[in-house]
Length: 292
Image (cartoon, rainbow, N blue to C red; front, side, top):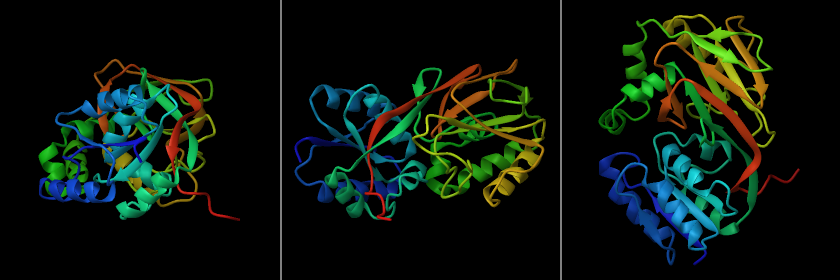
């Protein structure tokens, strides 16, 4: 498949496993060029170069951060994004229905070349595929080191959250024609349904409906927010009056404080943030839909 290139983030997962990952990818993707990143942010530039060289299938081999970078490199082009999920969580791969624990099957899906057009949201001009967060989870990302992620995996985020929980949350101002709440303490913006793993957080989200799904936690302390996060994950609808859920095409979040932004689990600046969405602007290689 000389029309396909693999962009591999060898630091996805733990350092003990990355040599294994590299060997596995090489054995699965025989005959395809594999370009390994050597420093943070390089996957985007490698993806952009691959498009210029004429590759039509560009595979992100890594976690959600690698997928985010490759998607940014593909934005505005017709090349399709393939996924070999090798990260800590792999939420976007789960959203697409990929067998996240079976790289060989994921490679078969890439070879099958079934394309799906999905929405491509952005925040301050930076694209993301699954999730944007302003406030608590971005602060957690900011304070969770790579060493902690390698040592503790997803648990590292909970450790950071526990350390942040006693602080006073920021005051965020919400501007959207579809919002009924003017401010909150924490804002999550979803493209798909899942957040943080296989958890259906954005109850009405569809990945190709042209809408951002927004959850605003009102004036709550961090401990209350963490409690409500659990409530949302394990309930079928969001009914708590302390939480506002709406869908929109545009959203602006501002603050008088320095509040970080995360996109697909990676830090991406800070407030103010302008969210937008392009409908069906990204081609992804996905499983065939289940026959009815």
